[in-house]
Length: 83
Image 1 (spheres, rainbow, N blue to C red):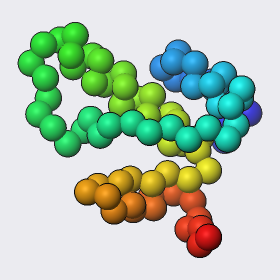
Image 2: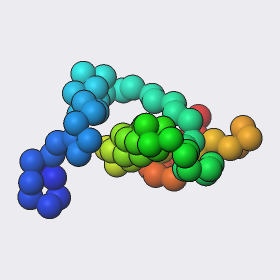
Image 3: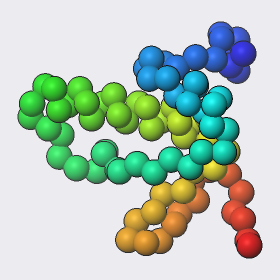
């Protein structure tokens, strides 16, 4: 169960739960979508919003999240690992 008491499920219907269940050690790399200009076309705006929601779901379920900008990793979630 999720912390709210409801069953843990994909808010977007994206299948992220199945993906993570079948691939628990997966590393996912995505492009940043939220820093640019909002698209004019409705389809493009919808795609951008849906993709952002999927990335938010994945980040919420991840053990660690790192944002990489210009080759510099910034840890957003999890513990820093020193190998």
